[in-house]
Length: 318
Image (cartoon, rainbow, N blue to C red; front, side):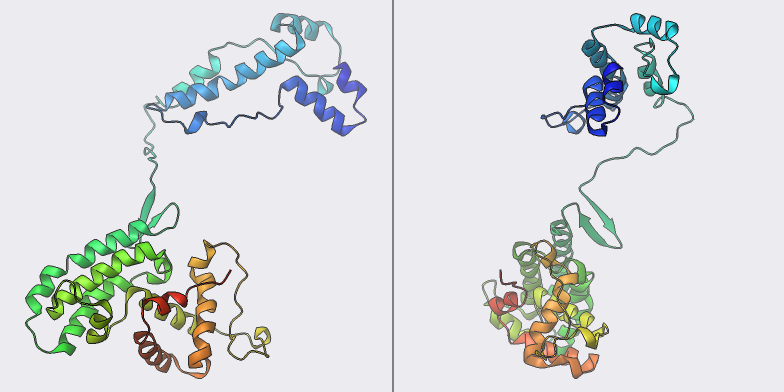
């Protein structure tokens, strides 16, 4: 109390005295007690139940006194309570029993919270790191299940009819929610593209080692990554453009690209939408077209691109 009174005119020193008394100095060690594996939630309860006792014990050790001495000082001192700090004797197991009883109430019907690394919302699996590996793994399995169905349809000689079946059963699965997860890493996208090529080979009765470029050229469909670029460009095309924000010195720059500097942000539509649109607009001049004309032109444009050129549309120069 004497130190607090001496330094009451200096706020910084006052707080330093309080930190020293209450043992609130920064701990260099990482507080990993609560994230370690535990078999029972009682360990967490015990940790919080002992926080107050440990704090009081540390303060008493610094003051070199005990609870009974402080109680006598409190009763004999006439200090204004608003300017005093008192530590009354407490039952060591009181707080612990109160906390432990909270989870044993008969009236408690709360659901048990289980930690999960991913969740499913509207048919899209969202993982904790937004890598979309779980979503793409799920889609790959659903696409490969179509092999049995397409095996019975591959005897149809009408290619346009086969393509319509593929659009209805295969591409509808691949393109669902692609605006969110389509910017995932190449390793994950390749997993889904292999499943896509597998059902196309079955549908066209092609051998296992049939070349990839020839396969897409024969069937005239887009790869998974090209579907994402097409969806992203069309979605951005429908958004209104502010003429005041357009760079008048560069007619190809229609939308202003956000200045996101992390590679993580470069995988989502908020960045890739205007970025990819401006890149394609250099070659196709999409701004003056209707949505239908833009869609047809994008199909013809993307079908001519190989794998490397397709990935270059998403590449951001450092």
